Length: 255
Image (tube, rainbow, N blue to C red; front, side, top):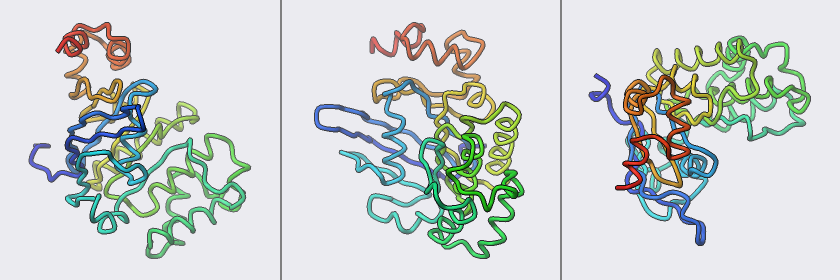
């Protein structure tokens, strides 16, 4: 049934070179609307560069990117307002209050009835009591929730997430995962999730891309990958791929 849905992401022959460094090499992948695609790999695998190219922050050396049916290398303004990004490692202006930050980003996206949208997100993400506090005075977990509010302020159709539950306690992280899953499933939004939390990947992702040294070395649903590697968890699959110790990983490398 998922295969009948329109494509939200289509990447073909995508590469990025930084001088002598070949950061991303020949990526081909798709994600259909209303699905969650995991992007996994160790440090230096090319995940951040890939997300940067999807966002338009990094110019591909070669290749094609279509988001929500639009070639974003030539027509990004047509869909930019339908896309958003979240990473707890990218700070918002620290002197501004939470409300001021959300107002700035909401206006950049042209959000209608922005005051009500901020109030709604503050209620959902338990930020109401923090709205007038400077963002720089928040804890790491509070900043993560504010970053998620920023990412959802425009009700995006495509959401790119980099470690969305980092610095959150287990209970809050579980709640955030539930909200993201509900947002995707009920609203038909698509998410690309880069995460080192394998439990999070197992719970949320319909499909997973395994990256190593700029290449996609394997892909499949979490249950499919666990069976393929003969492992009980995605963490074990991740370690097999990262270390090149799994049977399938060795076969892929030999090819």
